[in-house]
Image 1: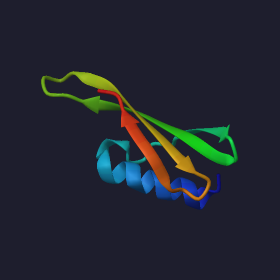
Image 2: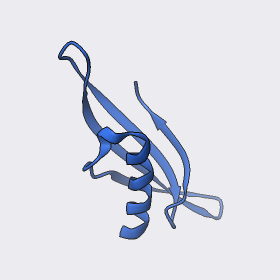
Image 3: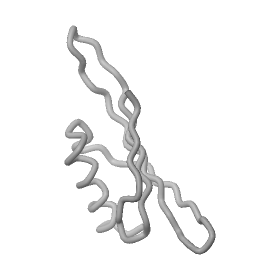
Image 4: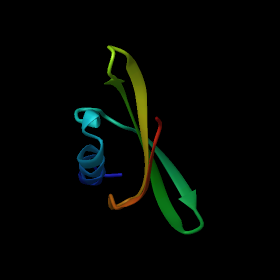
Length: 75
């Protein structure tokens, strides 16, 4: 996956989950039938009310051109 495609996916993630700004994803390539897909995983700690923190994980499935297919997140 080229750096421009990673930047496009990261822009989509940050637009929805602002706490992921500045987080570098881990990237895993998957091949399904004739399509090549990538799974990008973003991990960050989020501050909660009351001074507690929570680990937030955002998982994105995208194609090689950076088009997002699916986004899921932990609570």
